[in-house]
Image 1 (cartoon, helix red, strand yellow):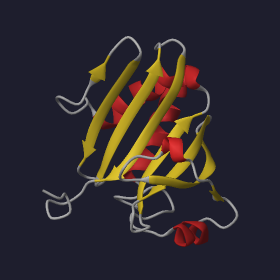
Image 2 (spheres, one colour):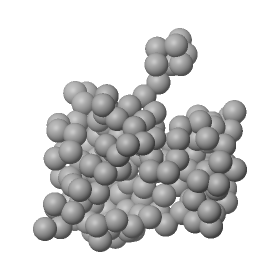
Image 3 (cartoon, rainbow, N blue to C red):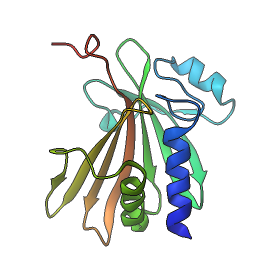
Length: 163
């Protein structure tokens, strides 16, 4: 039952009518537009340590579905457009269930995308239908991870990809 709920959640998140986006947001939205899309739910939150060279975390919200609780973090590019949503699983002991659900929804991770060591596991799926890259990352032992998250990013076209 729990697995079915998680699969339902992931199918909704990844295959909802908001293709190539996450829930009520659209890729490229400004921070003000994200606030307007979810009045009163999104909190400004500058998290430099969670930022990457191409995406700065500037806002977040709580997100729950199918018995799972997440902290959603919204990342924005240097032009101020939304380019990443990371869902941090609050109850990290359910990380294995989350990974199994991702495999159920997207199949095997993309060839060459799996990174596994004693301290971390990562995998990526290219969701062509949804227009998203879906990245899973677990830090720590599989039985007791210290962190477990799924990140959604837009698939860039060849003209947007740089070199």
